[in-house]
Image (cartoon, rainbow, N blue to C red; front, top):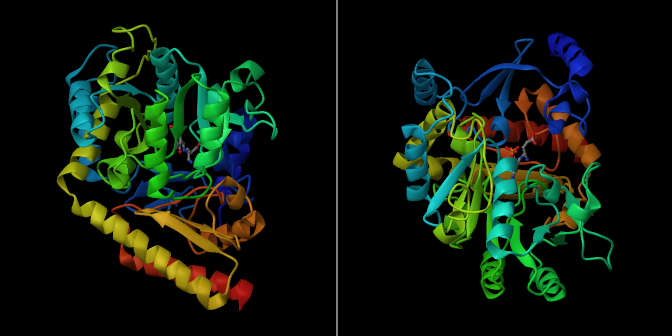
Length: 430
Ligand code: KE4
């Protein structure tokens, strides 16, 4: 496979963009090799600058649930563009989006549009602090919530409960108010509540973790978190940037039957345009400016073109429930096939997943949290990634991401993918 155009373009990119990319994971840092410069996409396929076509399992990291370049979404965007790109004023499209989100996710009394998942999380945290007048936030090791300072925090040393920065540039003072618990370990949360009685503004988590690879929690874990937050008058925030409108039209909260106080969205609600949102209980959301004292703003929040794209995708998902049956079934087919091959070759690998979200870990033990996810063999994953790329299958260039299916994928593509995986396992463990 020739990819000289990608190589040349990436060299140019590195001269003017840090790492040659506008988001680190795209640089292929953990798998090596030259990032493919993508020029277009259709359905389940990407095309790179050298004309190579790839079966895409990244889907722009989640937004492309209906597949790339969907006709109805493209038509909605073109229609919106004809009316102008942005007005900095209220528009009907924002009302339609807000009403649509609140009709599809019962926990949303009100919602505010922003431009990314990061912005949604950052705003929801500020809102939870403003509403509760408390300052500490509990997050979970291995959960990623975008790059706002208070979320780029890792667990302090064993004795410390306060967080320490997980990135240069994050002030210690900021990190100290973020406490880190262990995913699925309720006792670790209870300990933090006990050590910080009356100080916890919010608990935030991915209701299905998809940034340490995929880890599906026991349903009871989410329910017990709900009860704990209610007991301590702490805001429970579900970060559904990935799971929102992916697991079901009501997201993970509908799938597990657990109701958060606030929810963060991104990705699918923009259908590939830059969109995020946060929303939830009216008594909390009414604290947001201009109604209340918690400030949040954005020049392009609710941008009409982005709203048109998101509304088009969400209406299709609302009106065609069989889409979820199909993509969740495809996910099941993929996971069953992977598990059968792991069994056949006794490969030190394990498969996690739910609905259209999956992850193949090269780990010899079950992956249930960040510590077990970290046992995965990232070198083996890098070999696997390039084996699949050579077979024109584009996976996430990191072990700790997800395999995203779309409504454009078919059983035939899953079969082809499984055949390519089998070749790899045979090479490694025949
Ligand atoms: P954005 O700011 O990237 O729109 O959203 C941040 C975010 C928040 N919450 C969750 C659960 C997320 O997964 C994300 C972003 N996801 C990553 C992929 N794992 C985006 C890919 C990237 O960083 O380039």
